[in-house]
Length: 313
Image 1 (cartoon, rainbow, N blue to C red):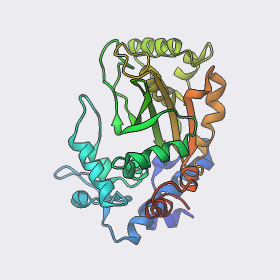
Image 2 (cartoon, rainbow, N blue to C red):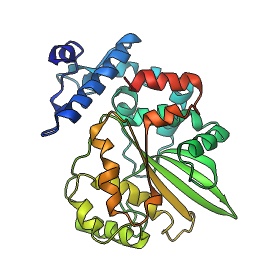
Image 3 (cartoon, helix red, strand yellow):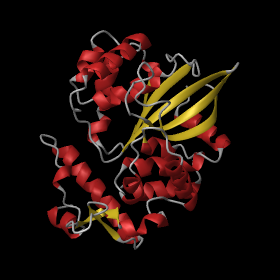
Image 4 (spheres, rainbow, N blue to C red):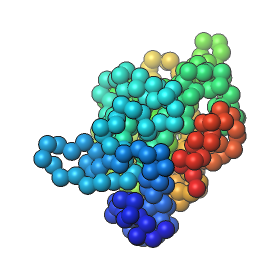
């Protein structure tokens, strides 16, 4: 793969350059090209940057996007069933959510449609969802009773959960028996890389520190470290899951978080070894790769094949 390959596919993007990390830069460029080639192989129309140009706004072709005019055709999803799951989620809006539907339907490279492609088949088949969850995460207790996408129990409510607008990419609600419930929250990553977030507002920082301490999942000094680290977003996603059993509602008595990523992504491949030393209790922080999930052969064969063809090389 060279610059000419990327340019001919309308995939040479400076946003894929990661300073000081040539390996991650190469991965991001290859992942973008993968999506452009997948789109071309199916004859889907090329999209633009921006996704939805304003009247009179100049737009340029972008190979890893689908034309906004095709948004209703579901080209970004492996099956009509998965497209329906994504459509239903968009229509069933949660209060104060920040779900970008144009990105969901038109950005091939986004991890949001990948999440639906990975887990969408499970939403309508809870027996399959239960088998899949326990194949991928054997130590997760209980039985899957609900699959929720881009889910947060509550956003921006003082004193509840993280008090911010964050959500879990997908959450599996579990029946633990005896009237108790649990949540396995999942964050999916594909083309992204770990990078430092903008400075956290002081009020939010205090909330993050409180959940970090009250969860008893971290060693001393973890909050100070993560607030200045490239791992801040992963930490906050983990905290959202950990905040569930701490909430006054008492709805959930158990929670864990899993990061799902491509083994070809060098940035997220390093997360486990960088994150785990700050954990007192590793049971609540799980990692698995897309490749490991597909190798488990728990998804229908056509979905498994489609995911490999779409996202791996």
